[in-house]
Picture 1 (tube, rainbow, N blue to C red):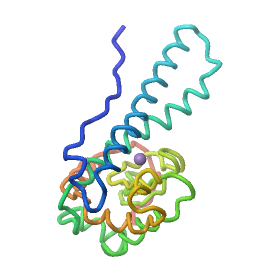
Picture 2 (picture 1 turned 90 degrees about the vertical axis):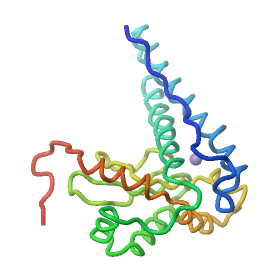
Picture 3 (picture 1 turned 120 degrees about the vertical axis):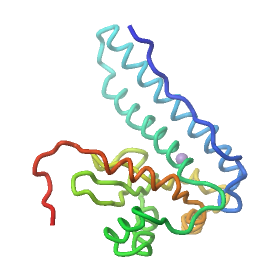
Length: 214
Ligand code: MN
């Protein structure tokens, strides 16, 4: 039997303090080393639990294990994306095909920015805002994700994600999350997000007549 692949915590590609003043080094350190690490451990534990259940042919805990897997693996993927979506001295607006697609699907970059930020602002409890590619209609959407995985839209590919959990900003911004979301616009790394868009556009879900092209 093949040895089971493990989820691992990726290193940040910049120093903890590199995103200051927009995100403090202390937040980045705790967020990456503690929170993200816990999701990695939780995802591995859930997969091990499923393996054990199979080995014992005892699936009494499977619903709880699947719930854990959904939460922790999604947390791992979302944080891995978030770290790469951000970079020091970035921000501004994308260029090229991504810029064109944003204008097509949101009317303007300002329209996209307002929609994305409002998706983040209005999350009830903990969650994320995401810019996703919808391969069914071949357009960009924003989604509001509860926790790390709920109210997600199946089939869409996350390109750009914003952590709206309190642990992402509270040490620095306290209850003023609007300020944190605004600060993030100084950090979006379009050199990371645009290639994700180019890659996602190649995805074909193989659904026949699931959308009408206008
Ligand atoms: Mn987080």
